[in-house]
Length: 437
Image (tube, rainbow, N blue to C red; front, side):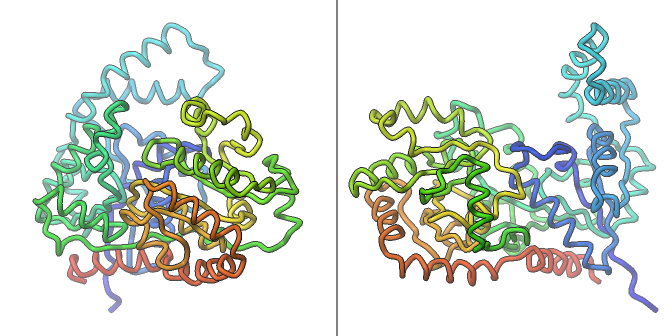
């Protein structure tokens, strides 16, 4: 008799926020999507998607568009305690998906009332007997990001797993006070962590951070599962393709370039990277090198850069802000780069570093948080606060061609140690142990 399949409820709520391909898709979106995709290679698991009831309509829409997601069924969780709010959410969804409906009075009223009702969503949970009975059909609940819902947490029969990504709001609280990144969501996350549930961390650094800031967690219940990079991130040596991508993003064909891909939030340390690039080319009288900034918000970076660099105007043509980069273009930009720089102050994992390595780009990154776990000895690690270390790293990569070639080969080898297959093997292995199958 064949073994009974392990039934897993997979929280895909996060995916419902990103139906369009643009810069709003964050790292945790790709984690959520790729873990789910890899689970398809584990036939011993029967996975059903779970989505917060207020996002169900968005999730249904996304599943119609996405071939991979269509392979799963969706567990519909309806709010039977307040049908009015559900009706408003449905109307709001239809209005947003119908641009031909202009901002008339009804549309504005629905949006206003729905917005004012959002705080009720967090208090209302579906505690109906029918839902509780449905929940008992599953062996495990897995959330790649979202806090485990109260209605699931109350069920003591289902094994619960949550993927932990970083502790940015507490570690960098002072840095983010002005934009209030230390959100209620993260405080609720810390409060929800307990001794009974099981957790995955994307690095040993992240595991240790959560042990420190959430003492209620049992360390043995946190398993490190390193992330992977998509297979599309692979090295290209075709000069014609690299030339085409340079033309597409208006990178001078006769110039070498440093590539950096990140948001402009303070912890990414982008001003530090650009400022020391300018010092590097000034010091060495270099004219064949430009700094290419990729990311959806880099154009907003200009005022901050002008404030920090008094001679910015003189080097304006050396700093190219190309903005959002389409997914299909990233591998070519990584491959064509003379080096990839990522001097972040803190990362839970640091996915761009792995992507760059997988494309054979020589990497300069920070020696803090999880980044040493990712890069190993494949590139240069620097103190993200020491200007002289970054300038020296630029010089080493630029002038020492043998060293740069070694970094390319080491990057390609190091990147092989990370994959979504390995990540999900760890996740499914732990679920099997906890589920007793």
